[in-house]
Amino acid sequence: MAQTVRSPGSRPAPSHVTNARPATGSLFATDGRPHPLQEVLMVVTGVLGVLAFVSAMFHNLHLLSSWAGLVGLLTGAYGQYISRTTWQRFAFIMGIGSSGVGFLLGMAHGGLFGGVIT
Image (cartoon, rainbow, N blue to C red; front, side, top):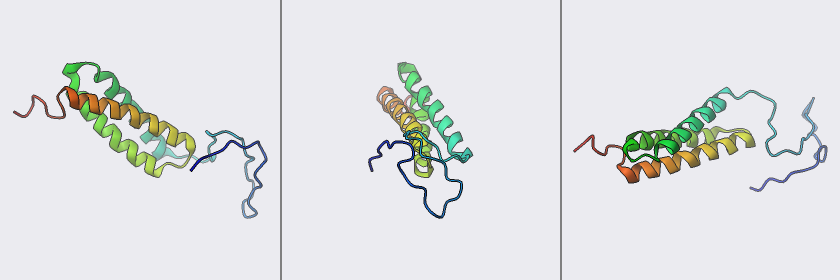
């Protein structure tokens, strides 16, 4: 599903919509409505992704990076599933990507239970 950038006003408003907002031509345009659940999930996914990515650079923090990455992947996947706008999908993909890198590096350095369960 490719999206294209159209010039403002190139799309006619549907006849059943009143007070339709004009097209902005931006890929990151929102629908003008609040989405509190999606925004909270975006922030959580982003924070967990950064935490997993940064902590994966240190071998002794593999527990933190692998668990933060796993939880970031799960919250990001659910958020991606319920996302409403392109901006939300973009943010979720960035968070999922950094969570995935942190998770995989954490798994390579010792995994979810490395050293805890013998």
